[in-house]
Length: 454
Image (cartoon, rainbow, N blue to C red; front, side, top):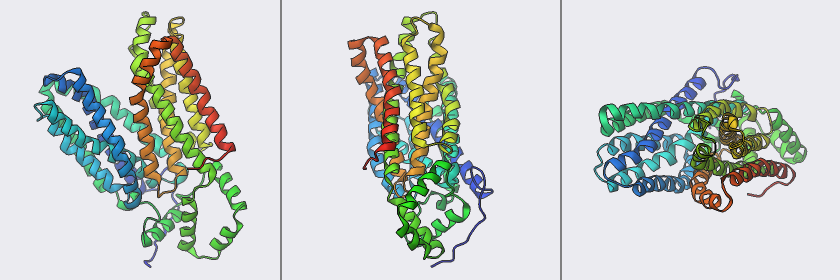
């Protein structure tokens, strides 16, 4: 058994020195990956049309890209849980480093489609594993804030990528612009290479690493609990005196091993919280798809005097506010309630869209509420999963949460396209908003009363 090196307790979001450096590297890698991915998602359809393709082909490549990423996450998540997140992160960024320049060399749609399949590996492998790594590298009591700041950085990358790519394409063409995306991904890959592997490795994965990681986490203060966590821990301890006595009879790292094993058997309230996080994420993604697909055109037709083009800009601004706020709240309040509350805020924003024909001035409020609600829901759900899921399942559950986002947004076009014809846009926005207010809150209340089996 190797000697375990104990370190002083760390304070704040992360520890001094190496901890802060690790998160800085992960944030930089995330910024580069999000920027590259977003630029490709926006400009590949335009590139397809420029190569002589039609709008169907432009949409098809996006559908294949997202569908393949959804499938691959079922493989990548368990891999990261078994072996650590660093390997999938490196694979994902490498797919962007290679794939982005290849897009500039494509001369027909078939070649573009093949490269997008390669980039789907990047989307599936990097993004959920990077969030799992951010959670693992931060103190547990502040992991929500760390994830909120990480998603804030990613939102900034999304805002920067589109106008920068537009300038590059206009100045030097698609080939050089996509090569620039590859260079950006290469910077992210270098940052990911420098991330210490131990910060991306799940506790209890194998033998000695299990004991070393458990001791390191305990001594560093990473298992410090929020007030809500402490209440749940006290309740669980009162009902499992035998296990507590057995743990007390064991020394040091072995006691931590038993604690890690107990965490892996997630209690009922933890399972229920995970179900709430995934279900509410799916509902919010459906609502976000409704807004992105239909809200701007509805606002332009129903309220010509309103600046409908500002709607999505305000949604993005709301996201910048919500990301750090959501993470901060999850560290201090019951996480399921935070997720449901943000979803209800989004529902209120969607309901305001329905009354724009009568009160156009509500456009700004609608956009901000939708942005705060949607991005707050996604961020708080990720933070909840990072806190509640056992480390042996963290990357898998975050991957499924990302799948819920992609499936919800992808399905919203067909679902709401049919419903808007049947009910009319104002009725659909009003009903969808009301449902998003009521359903998540009801799920959160039920989850606190009746644990859900997973």
